[in-house]
Length: 449
Image 1 (spheres, helix red, strand yellow):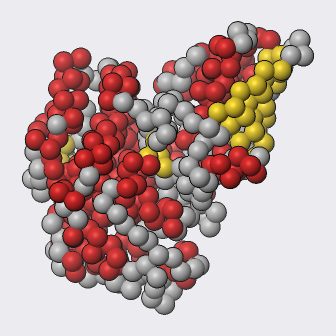
Image 2 (image 1 turned 90 degrees about the vertical axis):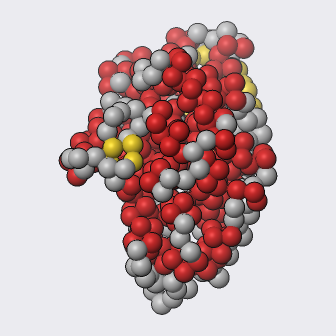
Image 3 (image 1 turned 180 degrees about the vertical axis):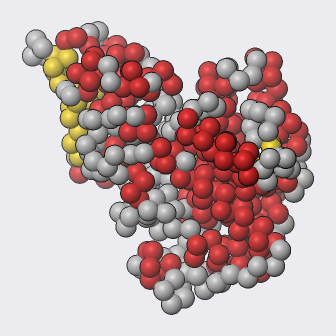
């Protein structure tokens, strides 16, 4: 049975020198990806509501920077704000797991805020982020929460682990922090079902904030329920309903994390790329489309294809980016998926609404088996008004772990999303600092943000 001791031993014993070179490189890529996405979400209403609240609570600022601004806040509030920036656009990374598709980048804001507060080196920051990715991914794999009704609950563990490491908590303090977080922060899946609200893109930021606060409490001597997993009415009984055992390694999970090519929910990535390839390959005019039929795996059908509410009726950005019918329809018409494709007028426009109604999604058990081995399979059939059928089969997309983004591709994504915040020279300085983060202090990076 997993215990808080498993976490404390791994967190306190793992150091930068334990991380393989590939893991260090991939961790830096995820840090840059997260920062770029965060800069791109500045100005969107939900994150600005968070900003208003954070600055109201920190009228004189604090020791941690809020990215893309001259504002600052306490470590927990900076973690809340910066995580909201990373998460809101649904452009963040993910791990494709059978029972859960967690987003480990939800932990980057907490890690950077804590590292800045504690005056940590770039090597320390890399280590903290890597630990968060490993623990977040391993927990989502061994103890998934989606079908039970929990919503991205594993951010609790990733961010608490990173904050505990970067604050320099000892073994007992770390056990206390994990125990408190395990007992205290269990969010409901209703956030992501039915008529999705603004909270979908902000919920994980709340967990990141709570995680940093928890680590700070433990650092100051707060004791927690160290039997939080196996104890009476603990995680095993109340949350998971069964025993499970984690096995942490120094960084294996970060290499399994995909980075999104398109600004859309995780499960739509292969479908969007495949449909665009098919339309281009066979020179299909969208006006001639009679039907688009997708065969895919269970999680895609469940989360974005109609298993958690009708996805043909999006009314806002949060519903649209979580809809396979919408994201495919607007991508087919516009040839891309960026912020403009989620403007209210675009969501409700006649051409998108019409094409969206032609899209059907069906689970194929064989494709579910492929997904469970790490692929993201889609079979896409387009039928035209002339009665011709066009088909493409894909198992991955550009950014999938089997076809990972290069630094060049990632930099292009960064420039594309952050161009409205910083000029090109400034963006290049951020990129170079992250690429060589092991040679810098965390403060060198946050000064650029």
